[in-house]
Amino acid sequence: MSTRMRILIAVVGFVSLVAVALAAIGSAAGPTRRAAHAGTPGAVSLDPGPRLIARSTARDTRDHLVAVAASDPAGPRTVAQISCVRVSAAGGTGICLRLADGLRTFEAVVLGPDGTEHRALPLVGVPNRARVSPSGRLVTWTVFVTGDSYNGGRFATRVGILDTGTGDLVSTLEDWAVSVDGRPYQAEDLNFWGVTFAPDDRYFYATMSTAGRRYLVHGDLTTRSIRTVRENVECPSLSPDGTRLAFKSAVAGDPDRGWRLSVLDLAGGGVLPLAETRSVDDQAAWIDARTVAYGLRRGGGHADVWQVPADGSGAPSVLIPDADSPATLAGPVEPSADRPKT
Image (cartoon, rainbow, N blue to C red; front, side, top):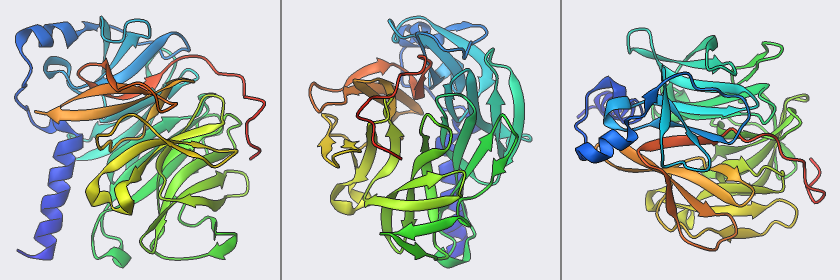
């Protein structure tokens, strides 16, 4: 089989995985489970409040944006009309990464507080991650792309960031000023993914890979600069008080062995493995200061949102059945006095 054909098969397989709306996949759930998670059609408010949103993986509402009460996340859900591959929301703003143009390409759609579409931007690649800053001003996405000459046609990643207030768009981080271990660094194989914003709408954390190594990086939107923080940290997620990062790391540094969820103390540098020992290939979301949530696939195109304590105690449990890509709509949290300086 030719290299070109292998790449084509990989792309088709990945698109089918993340955009299951391309085909009708038989549901493994029974009638009772489907009825319980079908939900009620209606408008989904993205205003701050005691609610969670997610992407439905239930057969009858697959890919639709859904909202549930934070006090009863496994209970009744409201199902929006819009369908997404990945969703996120904060501060009254949402982002939906979805199929567009007759199911041939993808786009990022910015949603207003009432869930209506405010702006759509074409995506050159397959959606993978999405985030909104706590204020709702900044939205970001990560896509998988192919065709970069340096990697022989294998998948690469690219980040986009939109300022919804000014309309300014960052289409890539690859041309920013990068420093590795405090020294200026340039390379053609820079890849970035999994942005998470600080509350000030200036700084962010993300993952960067180069020369076979993965780094947690700290970015500055004002100076357009990026510096490395530490290695083997992927898909970071900043805690509500800005003191910790939930992240996944490759087991023994080898992604083929899966990923383990942990929490990094930004001030002290300590890493705390969480009680979830299964491989989690997701960018975790903080539901509150004590809990992180993440999606886990279970076959047949289905997934569930799980939760686990952020202090390493307890055990994982299902938070939202038949869903993935969770986000909390809880209001902003006052920064901790112990928050590390950016």
